[in-house]
Image (cartoon, rainbow, N blue to C red):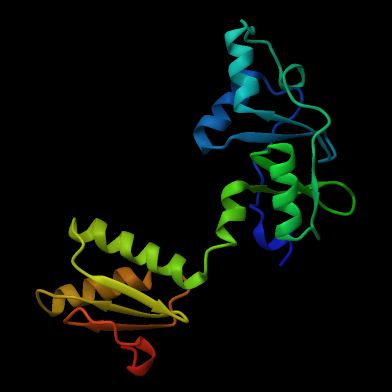
Length: 199
């Protein structure tokens, strides 16, 4: 696994001439902790964080203050061939929340966040279980079903009011990418779902 398998793209970035106010709006709108700052050729020239923008606001920055005046330089970047372990080491060593990823020409192609790196530590089945469980809890407003995923095959156990509810639960579960099979059981049980035929 390389940076290209972990990073987010397309990347939301700003230029040095972007106003601090506009950069702040982007951070808030997207829920980011930081934004890469790129030149006209797409090369990373800095990084601007929420702390940078907050500091500028507190110290009385004018509406004309631009990112170039508040960003961190030089920006620390990672190569597209970096492994998750190398990315994590860079993030932790430098206390970063956003690590820009660049290609051979040093052009920005993605970003890696701490959340992206944490995601690589979670087994796929656990991630699927969490997503399906959340969908079903939102639907029923309670923990009515037990969800278990093994190698992508999902078993949902618990009481169903009727066939219509079974169809709703099936439709909800199948909206989660990565499900390879689905089994519905009317009782809670810990039987291996791979022993039963998927519906």
